[in-house]
Length: 149
Image (tube, rainbow, N blue to C red; front, top):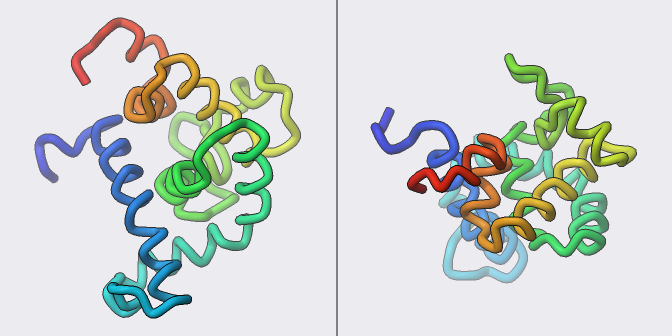
């Protein structure tokens, strides 16, 4: 593993990359864009297809909370690979790998809404998507202590 690809930094890099890659997949699949759908590995395409099953919910909650749809989709892909039944070693659950306590505090009905609402709060708090992603992954207090990004 690359020395720089650890913890939140890796998560932020992957999510930012996916916000560029996923729209390219959609464009190439539908409009014969510059990239071919064959240019992407089966693993990425499989994850993307799983996340497309909840696309309507991602769009609805992204619009409600003012989160970029591509960012929300990429976080979901990174956090769970589109697996609603995933539980991390720390206890984070579902598509967006939200801790049960965080979901309760957010007072929402679904894991999808919890993840997107939490992203929205982090973007609002830090006014930058990269800091928001770091806070989503490592906790807002870690970013709030002015640690180097």
